[in-house]
Image (cartoon, rainbow, N blue to C red; front, side):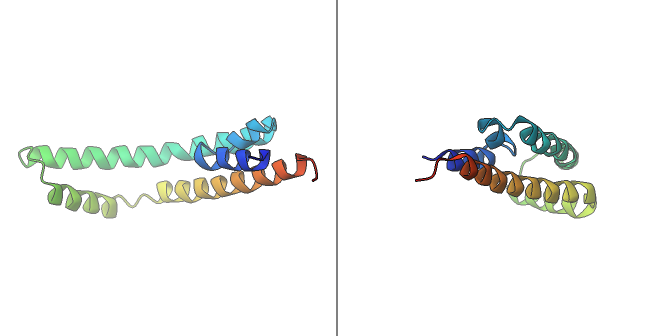
Length: 115
């Protein structure tokens, strides 16, 4: 498997910047990794708040776990949360991920010997 393919797969399957570290482009890897980790914060915070709200509602209703009711509560808390920061962070993370994959592949191709 070529270095460019491995680098692109690392960036795709692990986290943005992983392929850059493999190619020894540490600065570029950090330039993708740090913002990606920062984007995860509001996403995880929103998910934890929604999970807490759902669990609180389930406990208030007697603690019986009905999958249909849990699904309904998740839909309600998702609609009510208005997580615009989490949505923006998700879009930024997707963009960083795509950028990381493409750039790692491009850097790998640039450094491969010609055949």
